[in-house]
Image (cartoon, rainbow, N blue to C red; front, side, top):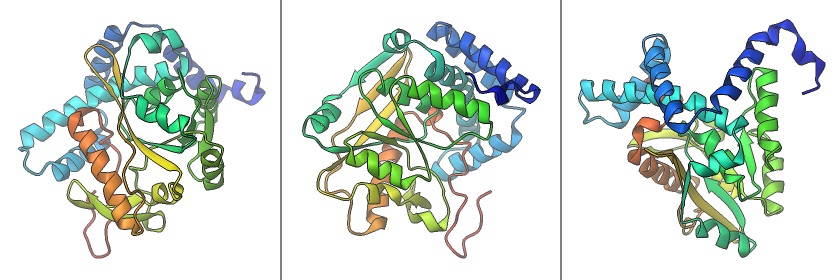
Amino acid sequence: MNNQKFYHPKFLPTWILIGLMKLGAKLPFKIQVSLGKVIGIMLYPLLSRFRNIAFINISRCFPNKKKSEVEMLVKQNFEAIGISIFETANAYFATNAKIESMLTIRNEQHLTKAIEKNKNVILLAAHFLPLMLGSRALLLKHNIANIYRPQNNALFDEVMRKGFVNNGAVMIKTKDTRGMLKSIKDKLPIWYAPDQDLGMEKCVFAPFFNIQTATVSATARLAKGNNTAVIPYFFIRTESGYQMEFSPPIDNYPDSDPVNSASMTNQILETQILKHPEQYLWIHRRFKTRPIGEAEFY
Protein backbone atom coordinates (compact mmCIF):
# COMPACT_ATOMS: atom_id res chain seq x y z
CA MET A 1 0.00 0.00 0.00
CA ASN A 2 1.80 3.11 -1.25
CA ASN A 3 -0.52 5.88 -0.13
CA GLN A 4 1.67 8.04 2.11
CA LYS A 5 -1.24 9.42 4.14
CA PHE A 6 -1.66 6.03 5.78
CA TYR A 7 1.77 6.33 7.40
CA HIS A 8 0.58 9.12 9.67
CA PRO A 9 1.03 8.19 13.37
CA LYS A 10 -2.73 8.25 13.89
CA PHE A 11 -2.94 5.06 11.83
CA LEU A 12 -0.44 3.18 14.02
CA PRO A 13 -3.17 1.32 16.00
CA THR A 14 -4.78 0.30 12.72
CA TRP A 15 -1.47 -1.01 11.35
CA ILE A 16 -1.03 -3.04 14.53
CA LEU A 17 -4.55 -4.44 14.13
CA ILE A 18 -3.83 -5.31 10.50
CA GLY A 19 -0.66 -7.13 11.55
CA LEU A 20 -2.55 -9.10 14.19
CA MET A 21 -5.25 -9.98 11.66
CA LYS A 22 -2.66 -11.26 9.20
CA LEU A 23 -1.23 -13.47 11.93
CA GLY A 24 -4.71 -14.58 13.00
CA ALA A 25 -5.57 -15.59 9.45
CA LYS A 26 -2.71 -18.11 9.54
CA LEU A 27 -4.10 -19.98 12.55
CA PRO A 28 -5.95 -23.30 12.04
CA PHE A 29 -9.75 -23.15 12.07
CA LYS A 30 -10.16 -24.93 15.42
CA ILE A 31 -7.74 -22.55 17.15
CA GLN A 32 -9.47 -19.53 15.61
CA VAL A 33 -12.81 -20.74 16.97
CA SER A 34 -11.42 -21.43 20.44
CA LEU A 35 -9.64 -18.09 20.72
CA GLY A 36 -12.62 -16.29 19.23
CA LYS A 37 -14.95 -17.68 21.86
CA VAL A 38 -12.59 -16.49 24.61
CA ILE A 39 -12.49 -13.01 23.06
CA GLY A 40 -16.30 -12.99 22.85
CA ILE A 41 -16.62 -14.00 26.49
CA MET A 42 -14.27 -11.15 27.43
CA LEU A 43 -16.24 -8.65 25.33
CA TYR A 44 -19.60 -9.66 26.82
CA PRO A 45 -19.32 -7.67 30.11
CA LEU A 46 -17.52 -4.77 28.42
CA LEU A 47 -19.87 -3.93 25.54
CA SER A 48 -23.00 -3.22 27.55
CA ARG A 49 -24.65 -1.12 24.83
CA PHE A 50 -24.40 -3.85 22.22
CA ARG A 51 -25.32 -6.50 24.78
CA ASN A 52 -28.53 -4.61 25.54
CA ILE A 53 -29.36 -4.19 21.85
CA ALA A 54 -28.90 -7.93 21.29
CA PHE A 55 -31.06 -8.73 24.33
CA ILE A 56 -33.88 -6.48 23.11
CA ASN A 57 -33.73 -7.86 19.55
CA ILE A 58 -33.74 -11.48 20.63
CA SER A 59 -36.47 -10.92 23.24
CA ARG A 60 -38.69 -9.31 20.60
CA CYS A 61 -38.01 -11.94 17.92
CA PHE A 62 -38.39 -14.88 20.30
CA PRO A 63 -41.13 -13.78 22.73
CA ASN A 64 -41.63 -17.34 23.98
CA LYS A 65 -38.06 -17.62 25.28
CA LYS A 66 -37.49 -17.21 28.98
CA LYS A 67 -35.15 -14.44 30.15
CA SER A 68 -32.46 -17.02 30.97
CA GLU A 69 -32.76 -18.49 27.46
CA VAL A 70 -32.44 -15.05 25.89
CA GLU A 71 -29.36 -14.31 28.00
CA MET A 72 -27.82 -17.63 26.95
CA LEU A 73 -28.39 -16.84 23.28
CA VAL A 74 -26.87 -13.37 23.73
CA LYS A 75 -23.76 -14.96 25.28
CA GLN A 76 -23.52 -17.41 22.39
CA ASN A 77 -23.89 -14.49 20.02
CA PHE A 78 -20.96 -12.71 21.67
CA GLU A 79 -18.86 -15.84 21.28
CA ALA A 80 -19.74 -15.73 17.58
CA ILE A 81 -18.74 -12.06 17.50
CA GLY A 82 -15.32 -13.00 18.89
CA ILE A 83 -14.94 -15.72 16.25
CA SER A 84 -15.98 -13.24 13.54
CA ILE A 85 -12.77 -11.29 14.18
CA PHE A 86 -10.86 -14.23 12.75
CA GLU A 87 -13.45 -14.75 10.02
CA THR A 88 -12.94 -11.17 8.89
CA ALA A 89 -9.17 -11.69 8.99
CA ASN A 90 -9.62 -14.77 6.80
CA ALA A 91 -11.75 -12.75 4.37
CA TYR A 92 -8.98 -10.18 3.89
CA PHE A 93 -5.79 -12.17 4.27
CA ALA A 94 -6.29 -15.96 4.09
CA THR A 95 -5.12 -17.85 1.03
CA ASN A 96 -7.60 -19.34 -1.40
CA ALA A 97 -6.31 -22.78 -0.46
CA LYS A 98 -7.10 -22.24 3.22
CA ILE A 99 -10.61 -20.95 2.56
CA GLU A 100 -11.31 -23.82 0.17
CA SER A 101 -10.12 -26.35 2.75
CA MET A 102 -12.73 -25.11 5.25
CA LEU A 103 -15.59 -24.96 2.77
CA THR A 104 -18.55 -27.22 1.98
CA ILE A 105 -20.80 -26.13 -0.90
CA ARG A 106 -24.43 -27.17 -1.34
CA ASN A 107 -26.72 -26.66 -4.35
CA GLU A 108 -24.32 -24.46 -6.28
CA GLN A 109 -26.18 -25.50 -9.45
CA HIS A 110 -28.81 -22.83 -8.73
CA LEU A 111 -26.16 -20.16 -9.28
CA THR A 112 -24.28 -21.82 -12.13
CA LYS A 113 -27.48 -22.53 -14.08
CA ALA A 114 -28.59 -18.91 -13.76
CA ILE A 115 -25.18 -17.75 -15.02
CA GLU A 116 -25.27 -20.25 -17.90
CA LYS A 117 -28.72 -18.95 -18.89
CA ASN A 118 -27.25 -15.42 -19.01
CA LYS A 119 -29.46 -14.29 -16.14
CA ASN A 120 -29.00 -11.17 -14.07
CA VAL A 121 -28.21 -12.59 -10.61
CA ILE A 122 -28.81 -11.14 -7.15
CA LEU A 123 -27.53 -13.27 -4.26
CA LEU A 124 -29.84 -12.55 -1.33
CA ALA A 125 -27.94 -12.79 1.96
CA ALA A 126 -28.47 -11.96 5.62
CA HIS A 127 -26.10 -10.23 8.01
CA PHE A 128 -24.62 -13.30 9.64
CA LEU A 129 -21.35 -12.73 11.46
CA PRO A 130 -19.22 -14.68 8.93
CA LEU A 131 -20.68 -12.56 6.09
CA MET A 132 -17.34 -11.07 4.98
CA LEU A 133 -15.82 -14.52 4.68
CA GLY A 134 -18.94 -15.69 2.86
CA SER A 135 -18.41 -12.96 0.31
CA ARG A 136 -14.72 -13.82 -0.13
CA ALA A 137 -15.54 -17.54 -0.47
CA LEU A 138 -17.75 -16.78 -3.48
CA LEU A 139 -14.69 -15.39 -5.25
CA LEU A 140 -13.02 -18.80 -5.29
CA LYS A 141 -15.10 -19.72 -8.33
CA HIS A 142 -17.08 -16.65 -9.37
CA ASN A 143 -16.56 -12.98 -10.16
CA ILE A 144 -19.11 -11.01 -8.16
CA ALA A 145 -20.00 -7.48 -7.12
CA ASN A 146 -20.01 -6.73 -3.39
CA ILE A 147 -22.36 -4.11 -2.01
CA TYR A 148 -20.55 -2.61 0.97
CA ARG A 149 -20.66 0.27 3.42
CA PRO A 150 -17.35 2.19 3.53
CA GLN A 151 -15.57 2.03 6.88
CA ASN A 152 -15.00 5.20 8.90
CA ASN A 153 -11.30 4.33 9.21
CA ALA A 154 -9.84 5.15 5.78
CA LEU A 155 -6.92 2.74 6.14
CA PHE A 156 -9.09 -0.17 7.22
CA ASP A 157 -11.54 0.64 4.42
CA GLU A 158 -8.72 0.48 1.87
CA VAL A 159 -7.46 -2.83 3.28
CA MET A 160 -10.99 -4.28 3.09
CA ARG A 161 -11.56 -3.02 -0.44
CA LYS A 162 -8.22 -4.28 -1.76
CA GLY A 163 -8.66 -7.62 -0.02
CA PHE A 164 -11.69 -8.26 -2.21
CA VAL A 165 -10.64 -6.47 -5.40
CA ASN A 166 -7.36 -8.41 -5.49
CA ASN A 167 -9.43 -11.60 -5.49
CA GLY A 168 -11.70 -10.56 -8.34
CA ALA A 169 -14.55 -8.62 -6.72
CA VAL A 170 -16.11 -5.38 -7.90
CA MET A 171 -16.81 -3.20 -4.88
CA ILE A 172 -19.95 -1.03 -4.97
CA LYS A 173 -20.91 1.35 -2.18
CA THR A 174 -24.37 0.97 -0.65
CA LYS A 175 -25.50 4.35 -2.00
CA ASP A 176 -24.26 3.71 -5.55
CA THR A 177 -27.51 2.50 -7.11
CA ARG A 178 -26.23 3.30 -10.59
CA GLY A 179 -23.21 1.04 -10.01
CA MET A 180 -25.48 -1.78 -8.83
CA LEU A 181 -27.70 -1.51 -11.90
CA LYS A 182 -24.68 -1.44 -14.19
CA SER A 183 -23.26 -4.61 -12.62
CA ILE A 184 -26.59 -6.38 -12.98
CA LYS A 185 -26.83 -5.25 -16.61
CA ASP A 186 -23.28 -6.52 -17.19
CA LYS A 187 -24.35 -9.96 -15.90
CA LEU A 188 -22.11 -9.70 -12.83
CA PRO A 189 -23.77 -11.46 -9.85
CA ILE A 190 -24.40 -9.08 -6.96
CA TRP A 191 -24.05 -10.14 -3.32
CA TYR A 192 -26.66 -8.14 -1.42
CA ALA A 193 -27.79 -8.21 2.22
CA PRO A 194 -30.95 -6.07 2.63
CA ASP A 195 -31.66 -6.75 6.32
CA GLN A 196 -30.74 -3.30 7.55
CA ASP A 197 -32.71 -0.28 8.71
CA LEU A 198 -32.08 2.65 6.36
CA GLY A 199 -34.98 4.76 7.57
CA MET A 200 -38.42 5.68 6.26
CA GLU A 201 -37.29 7.06 2.89
CA LYS A 202 -35.52 3.90 1.68
CA CYS A 203 -37.62 1.26 3.40
CA VAL A 204 -41.12 -0.15 3.61
CA PHE A 205 -42.59 -1.83 6.67
CA ALA A 206 -42.94 -5.60 6.35
CA PRO A 207 -43.15 -8.48 8.86
CA PHE A 208 -39.89 -9.85 10.21
CA PHE A 209 -40.29 -12.26 13.14
CA ASN A 210 -43.90 -10.94 13.32
CA ILE A 211 -42.60 -7.40 13.86
CA GLN A 212 -43.35 -4.60 11.41
CA THR A 213 -39.80 -3.87 10.33
CA ALA A 214 -38.28 -1.17 8.13
CA THR A 215 -37.08 -3.25 5.17
CA VAL A 216 -34.93 -2.06 2.28
CA SER A 217 -37.07 -1.80 -0.85
CA ALA A 218 -34.11 -1.64 -3.25
CA THR A 219 -33.99 -5.44 -3.62
CA ALA A 220 -37.26 -5.45 -5.54
CA ARG A 221 -36.24 -2.45 -7.66
CA LEU A 222 -32.94 -4.07 -8.59
CA ALA A 223 -34.71 -7.30 -9.51
CA LYS A 224 -37.18 -5.72 -11.94
CA GLY A 225 -37.21 -7.42 -15.33
CA ASN A 226 -37.95 -10.95 -16.46
CA ASN A 227 -34.27 -11.88 -16.77
CA THR A 228 -33.31 -11.46 -13.11
CA ALA A 229 -32.86 -14.39 -10.71
CA VAL A 230 -32.85 -13.63 -6.97
CA ILE A 231 -31.07 -16.57 -5.34
CA PRO A 232 -31.02 -16.90 -1.52
CA TYR A 233 -27.43 -17.38 -0.33
CA PHE A 234 -26.64 -18.88 3.08
CA PHE A 235 -23.12 -18.93 4.58
CA ILE A 236 -22.64 -20.24 8.09
CA ARG A 237 -19.97 -21.66 10.40
CA THR A 238 -20.20 -25.37 11.22
CA GLU A 239 -18.27 -27.65 13.59
CA SER A 240 -15.65 -28.39 10.95
CA GLY A 241 -15.58 -25.23 8.82
CA TYR A 242 -18.09 -23.29 6.76
CA GLN A 243 -21.12 -24.23 4.70
CA MET A 244 -22.08 -22.27 1.59
CA GLU A 245 -25.63 -23.00 0.41
CA PHE A 246 -27.74 -21.73 -2.48
CA SER A 247 -31.53 -22.00 -2.78
CA PRO A 248 -33.65 -21.98 -5.95
CA PRO A 249 -34.42 -18.53 -7.41
CA ILE A 250 -37.44 -16.89 -5.76
CA ASP A 251 -40.61 -17.47 -7.77
CA ASN A 252 -42.72 -14.51 -8.89
CA TYR A 253 -40.33 -11.93 -7.52
CA PRO A 254 -40.59 -9.00 -7.32
CA ASP A 255 -44.28 -8.49 -6.65
CA SER A 256 -46.04 -5.35 -7.91
CA ASP A 257 -46.59 -4.42 -4.26
CA PRO A 258 -43.26 -3.44 -2.59
CA VAL A 259 -44.56 -4.58 0.81
CA ASN A 260 -45.24 -8.06 -0.55
CA SER A 261 -41.75 -8.16 -2.06
CA ALA A 262 -40.18 -7.09 1.24
CA SER A 263 -42.27 -9.68 3.10
CA MET A 264 -41.00 -12.42 0.77
CA THR A 265 -37.34 -11.57 1.33
CA ASN A 266 -37.84 -11.14 5.09
CA GLN A 267 -39.44 -14.59 5.31
CA ILE A 268 -36.48 -16.17 3.51
CA LEU A 269 -33.95 -14.44 5.75
CA GLU A 270 -35.97 -15.31 8.85
CA THR A 271 -35.90 -18.99 7.88
CA GLN A 272 -32.12 -18.79 7.50
CA ILE A 273 -31.69 -17.08 10.86
CA LEU A 274 -33.74 -19.73 12.67
CA LYS A 275 -31.21 -22.38 11.58
CA HIS A 276 -28.32 -20.65 13.40
CA PRO A 277 -29.65 -17.72 15.46
CA GLU A 278 -26.46 -17.49 17.50
CA GLN A 279 -24.52 -16.39 14.39
CA TYR A 280 -26.82 -13.54 13.33
CA LEU A 281 -25.88 -9.87 13.81
CA TRP A 282 -28.20 -9.20 16.74
CA ILE A 283 -26.16 -6.19 17.91
CA HIS A 284 -27.49 -4.18 14.94
CA ARG A 285 -30.44 -1.91 15.77
CA ARG A 286 -32.62 -3.72 13.26
CA PHE A 287 -35.85 -2.22 14.63
CA LYS A 288 -34.65 1.36 15.05
CA THR A 289 -37.28 2.90 12.74
CA ARG A 290 -40.80 2.29 14.00
CA PRO A 291 -44.17 2.92 12.36
CA ILE A 292 -45.63 6.31 13.21
CA GLY A 293 -47.09 6.29 16.71
CA GLU A 294 -45.25 3.17 17.86
CA ALA A 295 -42.82 3.36 20.78
CA GLU A 296 -39.09 2.96 20.17
CA PHE A 297 -37.48 -0.38 20.95
CA TYR A 298 -34.15 0.94 22.19
